[in-house]
Length: 160
View 1 (cartoon, one colour):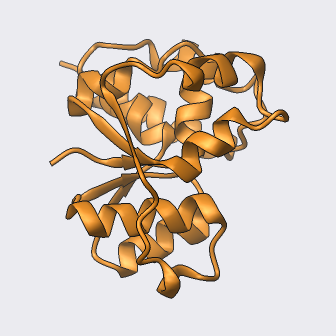
View 2 (cartoon, helix red, strand yellow):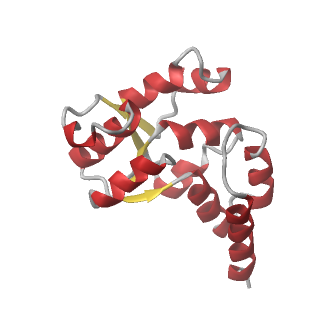
View 3 (tube, rainbow, N blue to C red):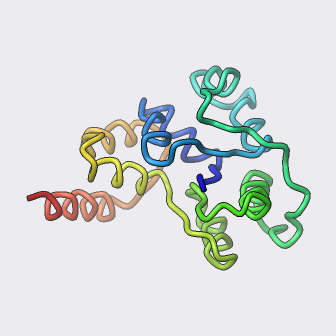
């Protein structure tokens, strides 16, 4: 079963030109209409708005699931992602939001974020992790430099 994606990872992967890593890792990806609305918002970067206006075939946009009341403390996008993941019986969510990830894990879902997608893809040789991190640093994405260095070190150790 394919994952359900939140706005953040889609947004950042589009901004750094690496959104095609998602179908390479997972085949297709689901997203609720709430995520598509966030990506199409006038405050979103132009490239993101244009991308979601004509999404690729691998992104399946679903109606928002009605079952999200137990995620009321989260933003609309995260609530909709978790409700859709539950409705689709998806094992994985693609999400960066800390509270959303905590709620996903507490609900029995696995979670992967933007950095995890980049790291997994680098393990497969599909992306230059340092270059992707450099491009990510030119966006408003925030991660501790120690985390980025740790992932780069782990990648180096994992290569023969």
